[in-house]
Length: 437
Image (tube, rainbow, N blue to C red; front, side):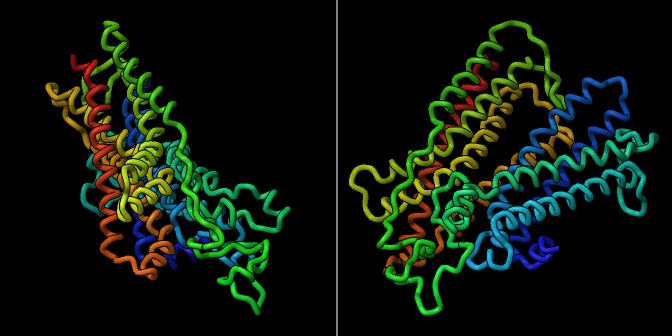
């Protein structure tokens, strides 16, 4: 009930993000149910049914990834001072966030079931009654346990993943020191170098003291102001994973080169009337996509370092430091978007002459993957802006012009575009070259 009340009382932008999660879960659930309908209509083509179910993994992973990003940026379940005193500690907030995610995705799964039954002709009274009755095996009874099992995959995966990502860390050490773990790690996004949130299990200041004065700070107090002269900020270390990402990219390109020169290979019937191709190509594409995802944070950090190189001014210094601070938060969604874009470009280049016709389910799956990855990147950018709200307010109080802050934001976006767009194009060209040559 508490999770439902928090969901109802959220701001319009938060509600919009939750509705987008519901829509993504509905689309993924509909794809899973269509796979079940195809298996019922074609009982002899079990291999193709399993292949269609395997191709639903990509939209489901994109939906879960987006749902976790929305749960992580939800301000209603963010640790704040005083919540532990009323029983809303880090574990309870994590459970509420997971329950809210499960509620949004379950609503989407139910909408998918209603639309699926409507296209089968089981529900009448609306347009397009039974429009896909033959494809969805309307002449056979729907196996309800199988349908509910498929529909439960997205809510279960999204809620469990949200709980794992948002779980409080260092809880044992926090109890020993009397400090809640939300003041050390749970107040920040995993992997992001943001300022710890002031959420303690005990009152941080006495009634007669002020939390803004350095002399009133006790061992259990953490200042809420990010620009504290007693605690200077230190640039975050460079994210690791760049050697592994380069190795994954090289391995993926090598696998594709081997597939193009090894002669006839077992075919893989791609959905949407695509031409058959060697199954090992998919392995190569997965390795290259993994390499891009792993390289995202390190490349973002490198962009920040390049902006500060060669005698930077205030504008370039501010932009570079922000990119370095947000490298882990923005780098991974950027890498995922680049991986999806490179895969789409390589596919379009590979089948430029064949011109395969996309079916409605293939189009829906592509829209789900693309939309969820882009929405995740936008959500991460909004979360990063909210995390810098206190720093931005402090800069404005110190006299920094608002135009400079906007120029810094545009400079950061331009630097990321200037680095990631050519990288994505180069990887896509290299991925498609062995198969088109």
